Length: 280
Image (cartoon, rainbow, N blue to C red; front, side, top):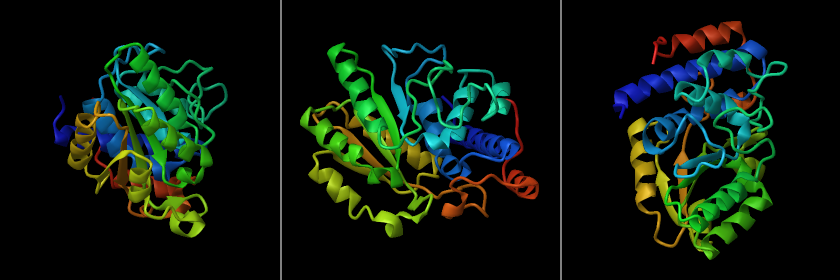
């Protein structure tokens, strides 16, 4: 198991991947990808039991579903660097005939991708279905999912949030990337979520928080605590506070970097703020 320091170095390399990928094609979503880097690295390099050889049914291993699929750059980088496919394929991101589409899809058969996630609001439903399948198959492994805070403005999410506690889907850990930003501006201005913790509790979830989702130790501790709460009759709802664009100072905290690629000079500045790449 990697140390916190090693995981932090991997996270820095993942951030380098992200800014390079979106810069190369002048498109993509760097802000949320950078903000969720610690979460993905912690999940795939420490917390989750998974097999890079990849079986679509995922029997006997933990499963992850990315609901806010536009942050595909961080997902692709972590999948590649944890052994699902060759790192060199990251250079094909968003190019013609690539397996690394702007939003993850399944018809290209990219290892690690179990569901297409271009349309927001659907991932929790899929994760619940997978978790129920594991229960029916007496598979004791877990299902993880990630959702954007702006995505919670979708009605289907709240149907899912009613369904999971009612059916005691207690092998499910849903995390919300609570960065307070979406494509049109701060979530509080676009459509406030109100007291999200109180709402999730009222729906019957076991709710917990990760105060700093860009602190690797806090993310690992938080996800491990979430794992310890499974199996007690309630699904787990994790509110993880992050900074959009974390790791690159001119991107941090601004919705303007939700879906904008850095230019040549901005790429140089961003890479200069991140640890030099090494082989992992």
